[in-house]
Length: 157
Image (cartoon, rainbow, N blue to C red; front, side):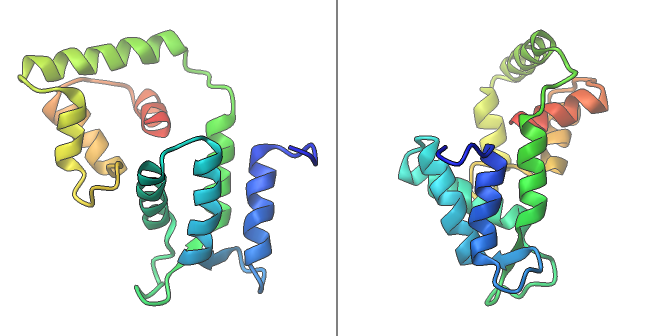
């Protein structure tokens, strides 16, 4: 970008402009505006971008927020975004092999992997919870994947 900032710094700056009291959270609407700009910059379609915004907003919504006055923890979102950009200690070839194993396991059940995840996406946001992801991999696909690798798969999912 023009200011030489990292993506996370740029996104954080966008949130800080919306955080008038400096508490580290913004309204769901303000959060959605910033994330939507990010999604569009990544050249996502409007439909996919809006689904992504809805899922990410739900994930980072402050638990004590009412549905009418929802607030979202943008600091936690930025930390996760930054972590996702860090080089991984887990080899990419290993992740690719595990994804292939997941597809094969789903095929032995007579299903496509994407269909299996879509059936667990109750909100139709394009995301499943970490709990559901872990449950699908370990119980439905019956794959024994080490927890750090499973967490990395959830991160890139």
